[in-house]
Image (cartoon, rainbow, N blue to C red; front, side, top):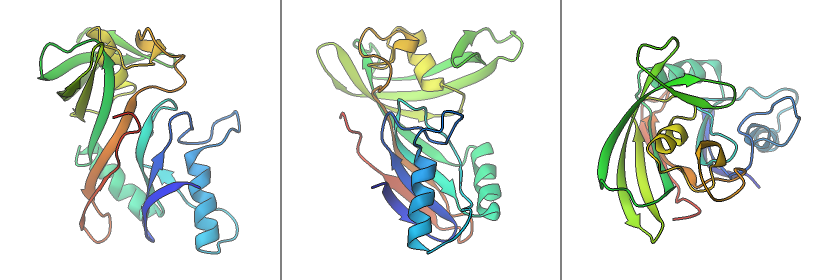
Length: 212
C-alpha cells in the first residue's frame, strides 16, 4: 500500500520508501508514480490514462516526501513555485564522521555528469552553484544526524556536497561512503511546504525519517 499523506483534485503528497524509483524508467520496474496512479484509478474509478507528474524527484536510494500534480494547471503553477525556490524541502541525513560545525552553509559548483554530480570550479563550463544549510541534530560515535535545507536544487546536490567535505551520507558508495552497497542511503525528505496551486492555502507536510 502506498503511503499517501494527502490528495485532492489537484495534487498528491506521497512518502517514497528508499529503493523505489520515483518515476518509471526503461527497466519497467516498480515506481512511486505508478503506485500513486493505481491508487487514483481505484479511488476515483478512473478508466484509461491518469495524469500525474512529480514536481521534484528523489533518487532511488533516498526516501521521503514527493509532490505530484494531478492537472496541467497544478503542474504549471507548482513548477513555477519550484523555479522561484518557493517550495521548502527539509531533509534528514546521517553522514559519516563527526561534523566540526554544528551549523554551516555549504557552497560548491556542480556539473551534471553521467549518473553523478561532479564537483567543479565556478568558471567551468556548465557548472552551477549549489548551496545548502545544515544543522547537526545528534552526534553518534562515528556519524552525525543532520537537518538540511536546500537553497538550490541541483542533481545529487546533498549527496555530492557532503561527499566533497569528507562526510558522505551513510551507505552512499557513489560519493565515498565506506558502508552499505548504495542501494539504500540514509537521506530522507522529511518536510515539504508550499502554497496550494489553486486555493493558495499554505500547506505543510512532515514525516519522520526511518533511521532517526
